[in-house]
Structure formats: structure tokens, C-alpha cells
Amino acid sequence: MATRNPTAPLTGERIEQSELRKKPRVGETVIQGFLFLCGAISILTTIGIVYELGKEAWLFFGKEGVSLLAFFTGTEWQPAIGNFGIWPLVLATLMTSLVAMVVALPVGLATAVYLSEYASDRARNTLKPILEVLAGIPTVVYGYFALTFMTPLLRSILGDNVVQIFNTASAGIVVGILIIPLVSSMSEDALHAVPNSLREAAFGLGATKLETSLKVVVPSALSGITAAFVVAISRAVGETMVVAIAAGAGPKNFIIGEDGLFSFILNPFVAAETMTGHIVRISGGDLSYDSIDYNSIFAIGLLLFLMTLALNIVSRRFVARFREVYE
Image 1 (cartoon, rainbow, N blue to C red):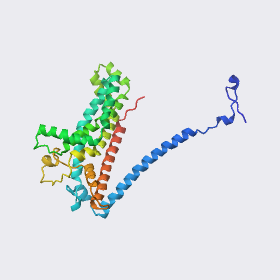
Image 2: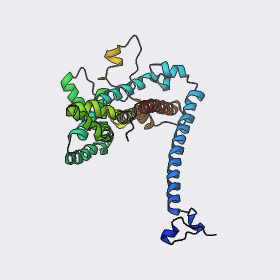
Image 3: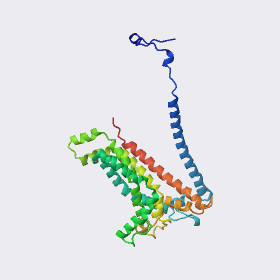
Image 4: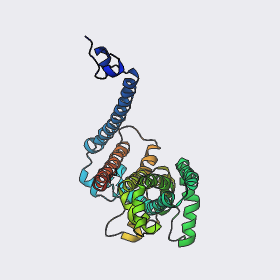
């Protein structure tokens, strides 16, 4: 049965009822299915990684009988002789990441402000790709750069008796240099997304370029900048080759009350081994499957995953709290 189009008297056209039905669009259906498949693969891959970490870590805590109390309160990490305190590895990881953040966050944010607010389009299109070239350099090159350049530089400034050949300071500085492109690129995108109307309103009120950049544009892009910082911190925590080469090849075990807090435990100029560096060193040796050292790798990896997960959960709440939506 045919229905008449309301505009038929004007156009003289008739629309059949079959023409009003939804027609299948094969191309869009295929693309939608492909995108769903990619998302499902990503989720299943993450679940698989967590499952394997948990399964192997259970062998460490359950089968080997390692208590969580000893794991989280001990200050000596030597699984082969029954010392399972994770704090030497955790402190080295946190110290390296802290030094990296001190280097990367202010420099990366300042670079992003310059590219977004001060640089011309030509300068931005030239400088940003050059800056991002740093992200393409293999991390093993950064590791030897820290060992052969940054460490001798620190030793020449502070003295050979202060800075050891392997230390977390030089590794942290180079890790910070490594993640500067990540911070600057993501922060610049967030700053560039701030509407020009906010800048024009600040200029109309008599604000200078610097005041507009620091007091209007940066707070308006705070959620995006925070996301950039969190990704950078996660990248620093998970960095492997730089710390494996330059930080040290053994846990910095300590005893509270006997070792000095700032002279040894929290001293960034002495050798220490991070969580990722320890995993690389141990997994590269001759380990038998299901041994105590082998299972400890997965316990460390699971803890590293939980640390990163907690960091991302906190950051998502912070970003949601301060997110700005512009029309």
C-alpha cells in the first residue's frame, strides 16, 4: 500500500512504504564489528595479564608460604635466603620516579605553555615534531647516556665520594628527560583546546600574556594536564632499561635504626635496584620454573600493576572533579 508524501502536491512525487524502511548498511556494520572486536581484544588481553600475574603470584604467597606481613613490612629483599621485604625495591622505584617527575613535569609544562601560547604556528609545527623525536630513541641508549654522561657529570659537580657510579639520581634525571616529550605533547594538546574566548576575555580585562597563560589557560586545562602527568608518572614507574643500566644491580637492603635515613636509605646518589630493574636482572639469569626467585618476579609485577592501577584511579577522580566543559 502506498502512502502519499505530504509534499506530493508540491513536488508531484510519491514515496512507497518500502522506501521508508531502514536499509542495511553493510559497511558500517563491518566497521562497528571491527571496532567492537578491537575493544574486546584489549579488555581480554588486560584480563589475561592480570590472571597470569595473580596465578603466578599465588605460587609465591600460597605455595611458598610467604606472608603478606613479611612482604610489606620487611626491609631486606633476598628471596633465596628467606628475606622477602619488598621495601628496598619500592623505595628505589619511588625515588627514581620522584627525580624524574622533578625534571619532567615543570620542563614539560613550560614547554607546552610556550608551544601553545607563545610560539607561532610555524615554530610550533617545527619544534613539536623535533621534541617528539626524543620519544623514538631506544631506552637502552638513554640508559648508557645516564651511565656515561649524567653520572660523570654529577660526580664532577658533587664529588666522587658522594655520587656512586650506579645511582638513582642519574637514572631518574634521564628518565625525566625521556618522558618530557610525553608531558609536553599531551599538555600542549590540553592547553590548545582551551577556547580563545577565555584568552580574549582576560586580555580585555588588562591581563598580560603571562598572567593569561598561568592564571586562565593552565587552570582551564587542568584536567588534561593532570592526565598528562599521570601517564608520565606511570611511564616513569614502569621504565626498565634506564634503571637497569644506570641505577644499580642489587637491592639496597637496609635496617631501620642502624642505617641513616638520608645518608643511605633515601640517598639518591647510592646504588639501588628498582622493581623493574630487578625483574630484568632476575629473569635474565638461569632460573628454574616454579622456583622461589622465579615466582617472586610475578609478585613484584603484580604489586607494580596495583601501584599503577591505584594511581590511575586517583587521577580519574581528580580529572572528573576538575574537568571543564566548554560549548
